[in-house]
Length: 611
Image 1 (cartoon, helix red, strand yellow):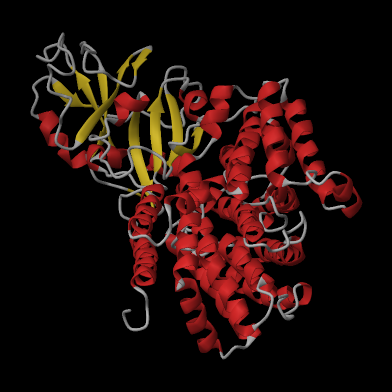
Image 2 (image 1 turned 90 degrees about the vertical axis):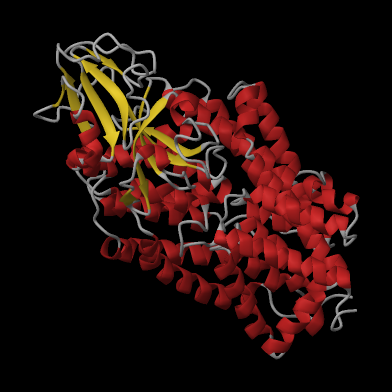
């Protein structure tokens, strides 16, 4: 015993707190590795057995999330959402009109569909719309992310967090939530939040230039063009032989040879007289190039990012994801050009272009890369887990696929399956009807069988980092519960709140809401679940209101770009800085908190827990 704590429970609490601290400071260690390390610690120290640690990976909620990722992949690959969104926003003239059209659509879609692929599909469409009309994307991208988040709390299948909490409830012996139960609180929160966005977003959000337009205007700050004269001793040499591969501050990204453009360049490309060499990086280091006889600065910068009618130059934007294997490495160390066959022209972070040498930039999740690529880059990496989104700078043409109708019918069938399960008469005749895991697996299998996506695409749709993090977090939650640490924390929590359920509800909701800005939302809900269950037991009431509170609080992340994947996804393309999220996110958080505290006790009263 140590100050009244058993050693295992102390180890468990220290492990959990330590993991959260590390995550908050966001080292270079991926989230799934962090949680697996914590899980191994509690197994080695005997807090839980190996079998108990692995139970999280068979949780029905986790299985449902995995299957729905495949379903989402089918809808995404067939282009059904692209087509719908393209037709919805095509006639809009102002950002306010776009948001008014998208608000109801996003709330409904996100209620039944994972919001990350929805936003990934919409961002390229909205960027193209903004460029065509000269509108700042900062006026629309953050509201779209927030609307998608709000829609996710309207039904049981709206986010992975809801499904994971549902799985924990079933394991703990609680009555499972039906499809629309969470919506009793989620719908009022979503509708009030959407109204808030429509009323104030255009006033509080910045009016910043589009990333590509801004870079085009600032091209002289990061691009250098040098002309190779006939008497230059570099003529006839490869780029490697000419010593242009490892310059101090510049990177050779293309050779403009009249009608021919060579990009990305390779070490074996041969320099010819009259070539216009385009370098990117730190322009002040041009002195290293000027020293080479016969290599002279071009009088006029001819390179244009948005030049019309480009045949050979392909420009893309890509937002780095947490799953990218190059996160934590410099662009040179990760050999970005060789791995992705693309040249990084510029890197945007926290709304600003990084002015340092491109090769020395250490990649972080959320970095927006402006790339010069081969023509097939978008099709090759559009569904890659390495990037949250990949879009052409030149424009977007919605795909037309013959399987789109089939994918839509399969998804509607899954929704009807869930709705049927919420009808008591149907459930009594067929108990499996309405089970989210069963329905999701069936929908995923039918998607693959009908070839809405290939088996390879189905495997690529699985976000292994997300699934491993959830599974390990469930194991850590078991450690909290089994060790008695959850009960101990609950006792302190109840003692601080004076055993008043309304105060306890407010504290739990607020704690989940704040913590989710630093730690993944699934981990927040999973970790707090045994604590709020124990807290309900401490004051002798049904813990269901507190479970609903942590589910809502963990899902509604508006205060920072790192709290939710969609917030990070729009940061670079929208040119946002972290403080921009507070301008719109803080009013939304306060409104959601107030509405949640009002409606939760109405639909889930504080009555005595059943024996």
